[in-house]
Length: 103
Image 1 (tube, rainbow, N blue to C red):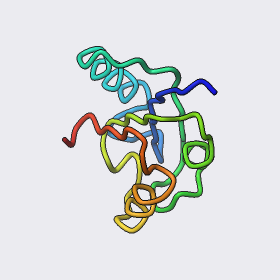
Image 2: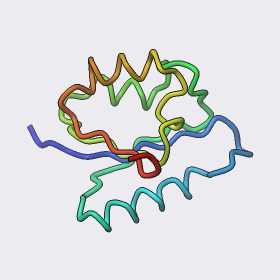
Image 3: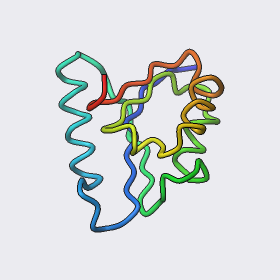
Image 4: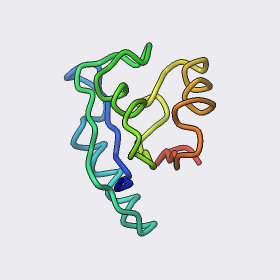
C-alpha cells in the first residue's frame, strides 16, 4: 500500500477570509520549505467545521494509506476541541499532522 501525505483545505462560505486556493498555496509553500511532498489535496468546499460530517474529513478518517495531513490553520481541520481530541487519539493517531500556522 502506497502511503501519502495530503493537504487538507476547508471553507464554509465563498466569502471566507482565506480561500481554498490561498490555503493550497500556503500548504505548498510550507511543504517546499520543509522538503515535504504533497501527494494530493482533499477539499471540503462549503462545509462547516462544527463537526466531522464532511466528505473530505470522512476520507481523511477512513482512508488507511493517508499517513500525513497538512492544513493551513487548526480551525480549517475542526472547530471543536472534543473532535480534535477524537481525531488525535483515534483515526489520526500515528499520522503526521501539521498545521502551517500553529506549531
